[in-house]
Image 1 (cartoon, rainbow, N blue to C red):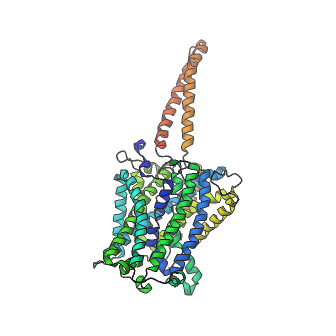
Image 2: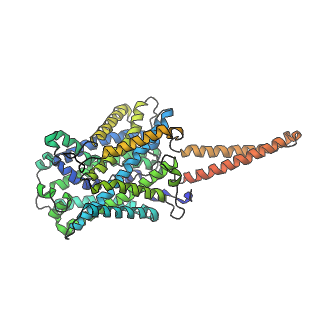
Image 3: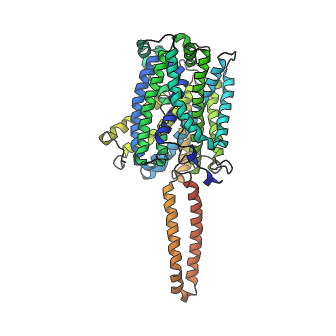
Amino acid sequence: MADIEKYNPAEVTMGADEISFSVISVITGTSSLFLFGLTTGGPAVMVWGWVVVAFFTMIVGLAMAEVCSSIPTSGGPYFWSSRVAKGRYSAFAAWMTGWFNLLGQVAVTTGISFACATFISTVATIKSSYVPNSRKTIGIYAAVLISQGLMNTFGIHLLGFFNQLSIFWHAIGTTSLVIAVLAKAPTHQSAKFVFTTFYDGTGWGDRASHAYVAIIGILMAQYTLTGFDASAHMSEETHNASTSGSWGIVTSIGVSALLGWFLLLGLLFSIQNYDTTLASSTGQPIAQIFIDTVGKDGAIVLMVIIIVSMYLCGLFSVTSNSRMMYAFSRDGALPGSTFWHNVDRRTHSPIRTVWLAITLSFCLGLPSLGSAVAFTAATSIATIGLYISYGIPVFLRLINHTHFQKGPWHLGKWSLPIAFTATAWIIFITIVFMLPQVSPVTSKTLNYAPVAVGVVVVYSVGFWLLSARKWFTGPIRQIETVQTEQSLRSYIVFRLLLLPVLFSLDCSQDGVMPLIDVLQIIAVTKVHILVGRITSSYRSIAWRACDCAGPTYRSH
């Protein structure tokens, strides 16, 4: 292990409620899936689907907040699962939660940074003859990922500044964008258009039903409203840890839901012509709305606001992703853990997992070269992976409710009904987001989310049955390590104080027994030094970004 003591993830952290608000990033998720929303149900599904999703996301958040209050650790769902599960199932629960969380984090990095690349291609078409294609976009995507990797490798000390910039940029940028398009729009759509217009561009309306289209159309809202577990990861770095993380989860969902709905309504009311917007030469309806309302120069400015938001979100998604991989490798769960569990001596950053995150995210974006729905598939994978990792500890809390110890922040008599509803909703969206999104289903329109999720399930369960169950014990617990260190220290002090007495009592045995005692103390002291080094290494990271996923900057 490198000089990990110098690695200080505190440089990239902030308040519990602020970080969740920043990482949910409604402007990123809404903008990147705006085209999907317009063609998969249209304005009615986008508006009312947002309300429904926000309600059930709040239910999930409430259930998670209760668990967070009971177990206020920065490890989040990964650590919660190991604590809430019973006995021999503890390690397996943490194992599965960790793998689904890892899947979600890789996919969400793909979704955010690929959307950033797509919007860069889009803005390049305004006032120019540039014609984007899949190969050019994948090249831009690679450049975006590499730059984010370099920032996480050499610019670790700047991440704190970019955190604060991200909060300001999202709050001011979103508000300014909506005000600009509403104020400059030549005309506004009617309330009837915004709240009742249904549009099916998937082909499933005739082959299946409009209800099917509406159900799969909630992906935009659900993908956007993820990342609120970041408050849990920050709980130990705030006052009143047993309540601050819980309030951060609930507050961030509420504020983001309202801000996102405000953004959606502003964009939908500003549409000048629905068909023209869908068929925009830029490839992005949201860019066409900007051009129609504020002109091309203004559109470029507003697009830059969105691109910067996406870039910052992707930057911290890589940060979180790499820390999750680092923590998972520290616990021995990743193949080649001894290689990945490393912090660079010069940059004080887990460089190897940074570039592992970059590589996996790039690979997950490669299907876009031959798939028309690759981006929405990646967002489906991200949503499924993250929400399953949220749902496992909630489900375990539900079935082990007689042994669950509530914290100061709890739901009282509503605790079990809310946990049940949250679990049911997560099961529902997991199934929905694996369904085909475009008809007819071909190699170019296949939703490959079931494939990605299936690979993770088969691998994680198979690896567990064949090997991991014999050695994986769950996330490393810093408290237990510190207690071990303190116990060893106390034992050594006790034996040293007792040593003169042992010499006087055992002098008749030619000092053999005192010699054995001295050798025991030397051996125990060496163990103490070793544990002390390990503890000092983990103490600098354990309750921060590297401990079981750390502050989750899953911005979308």
